[in-house]
Image (cartoon, rainbow, N blue to C red; front, side):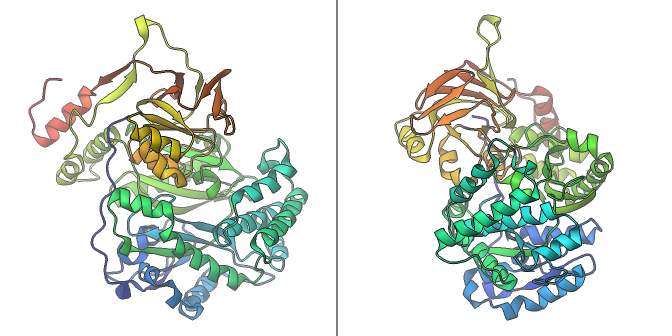
Length: 546
């Protein structure tokens, strides 16, 4: 396992809930009142407001403050309707309007970032009556039907509690071996019809067609997700106060699934594993943001975006450079490109390894972004022990042959017994064994199992998925999107490179090289001496012999 990653900073004691019962519009023309900070708005909405104030391209939104989370039943449509009407005026669209429909995303956001631990709903407001209007306004029937089928499935899973596998079965039955992004509007229309029937069958009632009912239920569901098992586990793991609560941000949708120069991405302004000053971005053309962060889809690096849409790529580089200087830290950001236009949807300080924490703080100091006191505070706990890096040691100089390779989301080397679920991981850990968690998808619902494991290997998922971000924060080696991996959950086996391994067999993950080995490989530890010397100089320490 890699050295422990930098911890999540503890939030200040929560303000009384009544003081945090705010509802505010967020756009470029609306300044937040003094004292209305992240504790009331949540870090997501607070940072959206800061980005809007910088003149960056942020879709308008309104936020329902963290104070409502303690008693969401006290929140009525009367409370948030004025903010919705202001958002409608800012957008020139109306929720539920048949000709010019406003579609919304509904997202969580506590005062401290909790990546992927609560719920998000997209495309709220789309229905049988508003879909034709979206087609007329956008001129893109495929996008409209794609958004509708996504809404039915997402709403069914989050609000109605329907197992996502039912909707996945609908999709698999229609697409065969094709990528879902290749389905035309006729197939997506058929998929939406199947999803509507699945929703009715599994929920015992029809999917709600009233846009305002959708929004009300979505807001309630996002507040309720504060109490989900994975959110509770995350807070317990990081010592976060349950009384903090989450805010809910309601924002105008932008569409990465609009075809052409459209897509969605997640990135870091610097490499979160090494700290190198280069962008680290995952992007999917013709996709929505949840495709990247959910851990159910494999994404690609930024090379294709830079090659196909160089003006968009340059606009993203310029915008994120401004973010880093304004926020004074490496940023983890989400963005959407709709028909060649860039929109920023989120930014926050990025999770990073100890090595990255050291280099980023030192480089930001050299660049004049932060001062000496800030650099010292950010690196106070870092020393030769925490900066130690683990590497595979080749036997007798002969290179080892990996079974397969996969994109690395967190560096280091981890070795342990294969475990396919939390129960096995917990049992083997209690017996004193080290385990490697192997999953189809990189999903945050596996946080309890991930905490028990030395590393994570998945068949699907992006380097920037929420689960990969959490793995990096916990100091776990993480390889995602391994296309060669096949898992047989019935037989409790996996296949890699023609080799069959059983649950309990040893597996080694090399997060430095993105390689996977059978058995237990020899490991050596090294300390990056140049980086340690820079730290010693910053703190006025005598260089220690290593």
